[in-house]
Length: 202
Image (cartoon, rainbow, N blue to C red; front, side):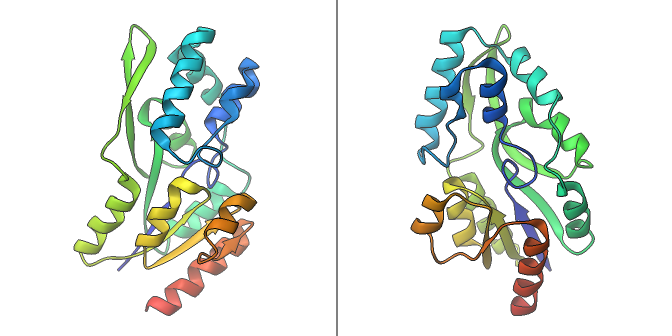
């Protein structure tokens, strides 16, 4: 049995923090794991910016409520769910992601939790360190084979642990640093990459 593991932001939905940056005018919030590979460093930076500019959870949720999946994402996900067990492995937070999950047909999502104090984001609690890679390791212990797709630095450990890893529309710096992973640029190419990996693993 094959499991398909997908990153969320940049693969199925737009980058949440980039949308927040555009709505609030806080350009520094545009930075993602494409720019800062260390997730703890990135989140500490974001939380400090939110406090500095008086942006609370409700402000962010209003932005997210106006977002939708990337064009073609829902059709691709429906195709994938017809052929594989699908798990979304993300470094986002349930407080952010659930409205987007509804728009995607409620796929299974493994992600993290925010620490909220009187409506303000005070911190976060990771499910565990390197949770995407550890989830794939767990699936392997259950004797599943895994095909994984992601777009950024924080996906590469997951891709490396999987039986087949695919980079979806990654930035050039990630491509240069991780040449071992095939690169696709749209959902048609991603379908073909999954089919090719499936044939190889069968």
